[in-house]
Image 1 (cartoon, rainbow, N blue to C red):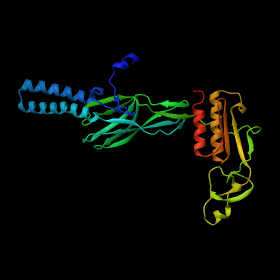
Image 2 (tube, rainbow, N blue to C red):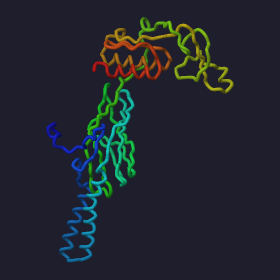
Image 3 (cartoon, helix red, strand yellow):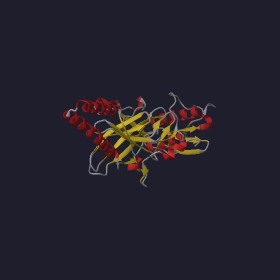
Length: 312
């Protein structure tokens, strides 16, 4: 559709709080294939009733015609007044599906049935909304490139109650998903320049003194597993070592091979995940940003977000 036509298209209007409300002038409604077929059958029944003058045929024809007409009102009213607000979206890696979650609220005292989300040919979830209630509907959007993926224009659909009519309304919401670079295949950072020692000791990642046990994590060295605890049926436990030195890795953009930008970002993404799984402190140095050493979920998310938005 040409861009200038969007100004004349009906669309759910904003409610001033980041969401949209479906108002009467933002709704479309058309008969479905079943609705068109029933209308054709009713026309033939009416012609037969006139031809044969059958009162019973008139009764059945007008009864079904009344149901056909009343379905227009019920289908249209099933979407009227619904409110849509953006909910939280978790970051994903390029190539995965971004699951946009939207909160759909029914402020009226009437229940709403068969409400579904669409984005062109992508079909989201469907749900029934209780009176004065709300629910979360998820819409999966495939991702290809890293960066911020804004939610495209969506539409809310219904064919309730008989599937004779199809009502829908378009909506645009200010919500985006952060897409991290796709991790490269398993590999190690350049060994000649990345690994250094930190003067600040850190419980559990040092190498000098035994300080205790913790639950085994994937990637822990087999040499640190407490086999005696396993023999006592206490489960897999890893030994923690402290001291005044700990291993640290510097993930430096300039130390990577001179390859394509996206390949460098994929390599850095892989190195971050490896360092995190091995409980190694790591720093990230990009041409326009330096993140000091650290580890943990918040540090990982910060570094991955820097890779996702690099160059924006």
